[in-house]
Amino acid sequence: MAKFSKSYYFILFICWYGTCVFMSAQSNNLDSIKTKSSICLPIVVSLSYLEQLLEKEISRDLYSEKNIDVGYGLRLDLNVIRNGKIQLKTQQLALETQAPIKIAALLRWDAKEKLKLNLQKNQNFDAELLVSLRTTFEIGKNWQLKPQTQAQYKWIKEPSFTVFGISVNIGKFVDPALKRQLSEVTQMIDKEVQKNIVLQKELDNLLQKLALPIPILEKNNFLWLVAKPTDIGVRQVEDKNNLYLRFQAFIQMDLTTVISKVPPPPSAPVKITHNNTAATFCEQSSFLIPIIADYSTLTQVAKEILAPQKITISKKYKVQIKDLQLNYKNEKLCTNICFDLIKKDKKIYPSKLLLSFKPVFNEHTQQFWVENLQYQMHSSHFLLKVGNKLFPKKICQKMDTAIESNVAKAMQEFKSSLKKGLKFSDKDLHLAIDTQVLKSDILAFAPNEARLSLIVDALALIKLKLE
Image (tube, rainbow, N blue to C red; front, side, top):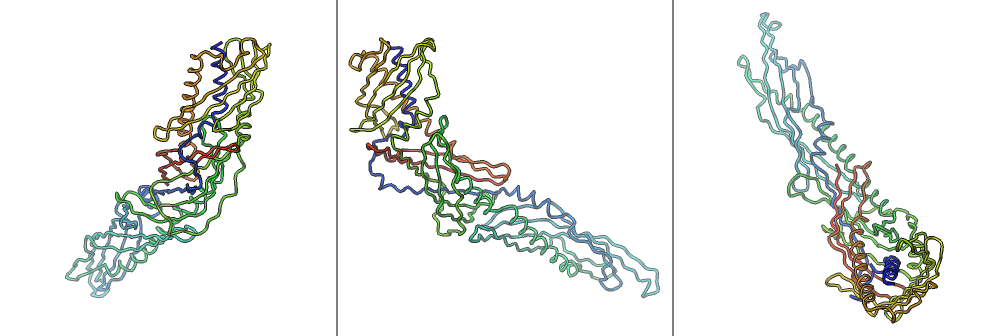
């Protein structure tokens, strides 16, 4: 007798699993809770990634010219090369780029033509300078990144020397060519940064992902989040370690919940084309998830999950769910389950389980328990023609304990599923969004005879890396 009863209770636990995770007695005033959710998204661009990019795009041979007439019968061959790796750092909301430059020169002095003497002299010399480029950023209304790079340089090894008593400073010959070349380099840096750090592309991609329903239950996907962004702001933020180029996006949105065994259709991606510079930026994201469901919807979802299954309760007996009803009345959750008890896949005993209890939630311990548990079981099987008054006290205690543990387990699975359900990834776009849910608490639970109403508060830390 006890063996059969425990198995039937297990069936019940699965049926109202989707309901139990929503139960709290903390507050009934849902109207006092703001339902706006926000994603505070740090967009991190590795400087090593940009260094590799610039190393590839900026040639080591910057400038070359031969046979430059510098007067006094002197001819000059110049070769300007990048003499080391490009180094990046961030400082005061700007990107600073440094590159060492080496100038190899060959000076030829030929007095034969003017002095009618066969007097020739060749001399090699080197000069060095350090080029510094500073890139600042402006973010347009469509989140278009507008970098602006300015260049300057200083000589490390002076480009002047004396030959045959003649002082020659090649700086005046190098400066115009170097400025022209640096102008091309600054344009190249702006172009490459703008091409490879496309905030609009990443944000549009995120909006497209948010348009897809997000499952937040790991085992049974019948609870879906649907997001509707309402505002977006983007700004640049400083990196104290000078290792990353950092931006921050703020997305405010309305979250709704759909309870369905079948995923709801995706909504059209929201188009928000302005940059809200007045947005309230933060380091943590907040998800206020309203879950409102009528009992007929919960009943239908439970039936869809359980109806196709035959649940084994012993070597001889299996259970097939035929019908299920949920309702809430007089502060009690009532469940009516009709099922067939199948013996050795042949004999069928139509059966019914009636159960009601009051759900209680402790907001401090985040644990559930039940009160006023009542149940009755009826079956054409002669062993189950009993009511709850005839159940032994030991069985009642086991049932009570089993319900409490299953509800607590359901809540824990809901929280862990929430963490996994808010993750996105897209390797093709080199986009990875990593979400760490810091906490998830029930804010309010307001059941009535028509529906269950709940708001869950989830605080998350989200990072987006461009690699």
